Image 1 (cartoon, rainbow, N blue to C red):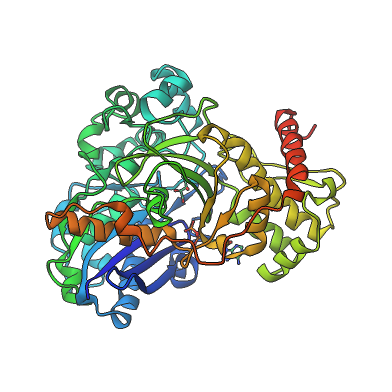
Image 2: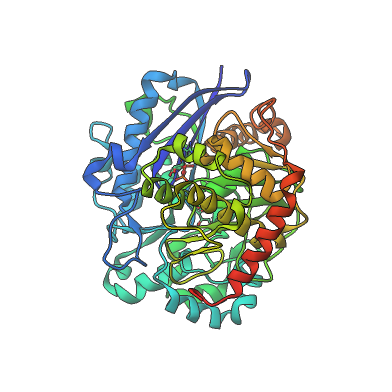
Length: 523
Ligand code: ADP
Ligand code: XUL
């Protein structure tokens, strides 16, 4: 009967998932690929080329176009009038800069026009820095100093100051383009921007995604006065208030009801980050379990009932949409590094998986350091690609295994602060469809790996949040465990058990990796 729609605006695509909670079914899944469906915007893997490899931006106008296309694909496939609520998630940290015209433009989107034309020119910055950007080291140093060093920054905002986080990105914009900053009346995150389009009004940034900005005080869940001061003048006004992830923003904008057939009272919920949304989408609504998302970035995360920060300064504390906390480790060289190795040897995913299967666990000692781009965890300002243990440049199968073993071993080492070795790891993201990768994951972590019906954990999480928020708005007291039940149960018979015979090989690899990480690059 009632349907709920979840959207995820990620690095390379916009995905939608529509669910029927009564039947516990996924009624529709669809995606708009930025490169393939919107070639006019000129992105590769969702981002714009730049002469400076540290600068990674995407055009927000492309995201507006993607939303229209997704709706055009949804409308003939699903009875849109049955959708009771919509929620969105977005790649974290990326920022959208809007003029003072934005509230009026959002409130008066003309259904006779395409969404981008209806919105008009509301951007004070034509491109949005996204999470892959690493151009703000100077700004990071300044903000870190103002917050009392790396530990002070992490205690205040949940993370040391990171290049991709929104605060340093805002500071760089304010410094390098002061006139455009002056014209900027509103700064949105990707998640709050999509939500603003859906609701036809400026939507607040939620506590979960807000924790990825180096601007939110994790103790009070309000803006941190010292961080605001260290970032840019008059920032609080431009950011607007923070809000819990569960609040309703209002009914869907008439552009969507008139043009796509949504009921005018379809509720729009607050947006959140893709990782917090995935936490719900894989069912981590109670503390004590862990998950990995193998998407454009690889992220390892867990739900916490109390805030905790990484003493090594490489991990993050974000909010969970449930109101709990989330510990997260983010690896930039995820899917794109695997694709790079795959393409280097002219393989497809099947060939890549067969190559892995043809090599022994531990790769007979062959190791690849796979950081083709600057890395987030471990924190590396420059790429670092090295072959060790006799891995020859022409060894295709050795490289396929080595890139995955290196990524997952590195995640094992850098996620140790999150807690004991997990009892099971839930998986999501595009590469979680690959059993060869999941087998290595189970062995590296020496724990069972669980798979799900959908690899779109963030979009599914958004749909589940839409259902939860709709029940709340009706005055009910929904329990998260009941909202996710039936959607986030691992696929029966799909669990991959670790092979105890491989334990020693991966303990050895972890030791070797630790030593290589301590060594000077290239030594
Ligand atoms: P995002 O983080 O942008 O939402 P996705 O979760 O959609 O990304 O994952 C996209 C990535 O999934 C692609 O870049 C691709 O490398 C990877 N992928 C898709 N299918 C497979 C597969 N069978 N094996 C390994 N990786 C895959
Ligand atoms: C998390 C991070 C990425 C983005 C893109 O800190 O930077 O995972 O959210 O998915």
